[in-house]
Image 1: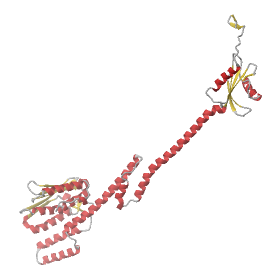
Image 2 (image 1 turned 90 degrees about the vertical axis):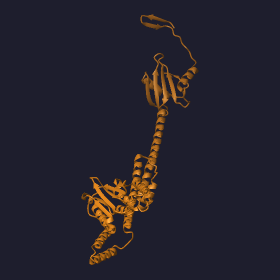
Image 3 (image 1 turned 180 degrees about the horizontal axis):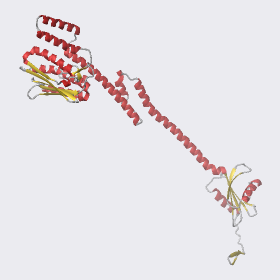
Image 4 (image 1 turned 45 degrees about the vertical axis):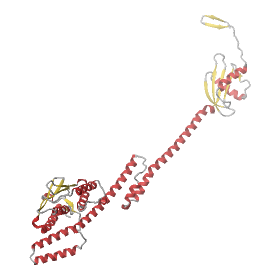
Length: 433
């Protein structure tokens, strides 16, 4: 190739023509078009020369109408153009990419099926739909399993609550002792229900214990079952006879005994005022003094401000009985003192005597029993020391009434004799019992 330069222009005078085997050109073009793709890939290239004659592929199977269709698209735009057009033969949509070479003035038309182009998108859409469907199924199964794990314990609660009676409280607690919880809320609900059943069961046990202790107190005081009306009538007759015989001491004795028995056997509230308890103790000590006369002296010093404090019936008598039991083990004179004091919150009553005091072994047994009861031990599991059941009985009754604020201390005086201090919360009576 020769060239001459005239100023800024270059003129070509000779041309060198390069010839390449057509089959190699076909292999080159097809290698570029189908590289990495299988034979079913629908992509075709058409090459037109400057005279719009088809030069590739020479042996095309496309009909004249189809070639004309592609040629017309190429004529419409000589620059790069992407067009979606409908194949006039197959009615399929195709992507037509047109490019014209500035050097050779040839036109290249690349035809590719729209289905093939959209196939990755369609496959992606299908996969996305499958994944979404799978997620929906997983979510539904998860929701079902979670709902079952939530509703199963709730249904169990509902069954247990529906079948709850006073007779099966303990079994109801055992049935729910180790449930499988699925959340903190259900665990809290289960624990609250178990705690409620336990506290209800304990309350029932306390009521039963209180009734049992009340009966035992009356039995200890009377030592036998007797008809009160018969007893009162008999005592009244004896009082009248003593009055007729001019025996004032016996009259007073029978009057005190009658009042004592009425107080013990009265069918009313378990709680009484401190004033009633003190009067009952005075009557009891007067009867005892009739027997021991000058050998026994006693002093009761309870301030009037304690009169309205509410206490269990027959709370003080067991301590007086205990003192009398042990002071008679030594030579007279015998002394018993009862002293009370209180502040705005608590009251205490102290019993002292000059007797033998508590046996050291029995005192330790009493203290151990009281400690066990203070830790909510069942009264039926305790065996009090011989002869001291009334003191244990009394502590149980006081604890049921005053709960954890009961005061109960047993000891021996250094000078000889026993000392008992009891007390509790100041609960004033609302109405007379």
